[in-house]
Image (cartoon, rainbow, N blue to C red; front, side, top):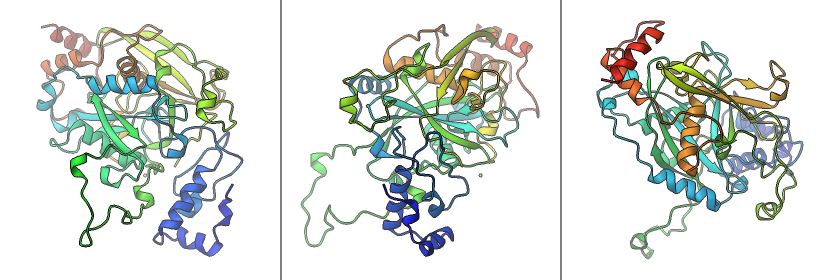
Amino acid sequence: MNNPTDIPAEERKRLADDSPLNEREVKKIVQTIQQVSSAPVTVTTADKSPAQLSELDEEGQDDASYYWDASTMAPLNPASAAAIARLRAFKPPPFPLWDRLPVSRRAAVLMLLYADRRGDLRVVITMRAASLRSFSGHAALPGGKADTLDETPYQIARREAWEEIGLPMDDAKIPAPFRIEHLCYLPFNLAKTELVVRPCVALLHTTSPPVPTGSITASSPSSPSSSSAAPTTTVEESLIPRLDAREVAAVFSAPFHNFLCANDEPDGDVNGDGADPQQQQQAPPAPATGRWYEGSWVHWHEQPWRLHHFYVPVDRQRVARPRVREGGLAALDEGEDGGGGGGGDGGGAQSQAGDNDDAVGRFKVWGMTARIIVDAATVAYGEEPEFEHNSHFGDEAMIEGLDRIGRLGEKRKAGSELTGEDMRKASEAAKM
């Protein structure tokens, strides 16, 4: 294994002074990060120069899968390929109210999927920073408010993912072999802060799309060859997490299909032996142990609303850790008393033995973040969850009811939150 200290001292000093990086230096940094172990050490990227990133701890070979490291990913297996095909084919019902909403009421979140070492799908989740006003340390999908009326939900989600975790917003700046495909939208959800939130589902590929035959031309002395050198990839254009520490405290991932299950599913890489994924598939992996799911029914929108709590194991993966922007995750603040919460409601970090000792080494994903992921998994795998759940996706009927009683105007009163009386009126209006 390469040692981070192999970088000469003068080179590390120059990198720390933010001098431009050449291609060799970038490759060295990426290779070093890929080789750093995470269990139980976590990768911290806040306020780190490229040289500092290369000096992270190196206790052993990491066996988990990461969306920024193509060497830890495999092609989609048949079940995952079928799930992606169902998401591509999914079309949410029309919702013309979105086009009438003021920019101050619009928000979107990005659900980014990728394939792990076994070809199983995982979803990228962030952890809210402690600097946010309430419920800091809660899990969330990258997302936030619209900047202009011209932005599509997907553009909002991609911009927020760039600002929060450094995922390039411009597809042209995503380094090979990665590319991002927008798969579908899910029905709109309602945040407790009265934002209308569109979930955007996307897939991070690690192979280039097929080149159309008609686009292939023979090179000539006067035209560049297809084998000419590609532009140098800078750290800013890589997928290495670059977190806005004022909003995002960490980035981790969770097994997508497990959000349909009441218990932990087997982890394909728990053996940690670095074996070939195809060989690992021949023997059933050992299941993870501990609590995975809890749920309860609450009244939200004056209707029964299933509140999901998932406890995602993170002790066998690198948790990327680290700037607060107005209109980002802070705009989606909410409480744990029910639904809502777009990008910022999702669940507290259970990394310490607090109220539940068996939750040590797990992050809790709950509320609307959990609801969105459950809805997406239901569509993707064509299966009903093993636990009780709402029969509908999203909160569109309730959103329409709030619009009818005038609660979705341009301005929102400071400190205003939806009350039980508001919900009753909106529920009645939604039935008209």
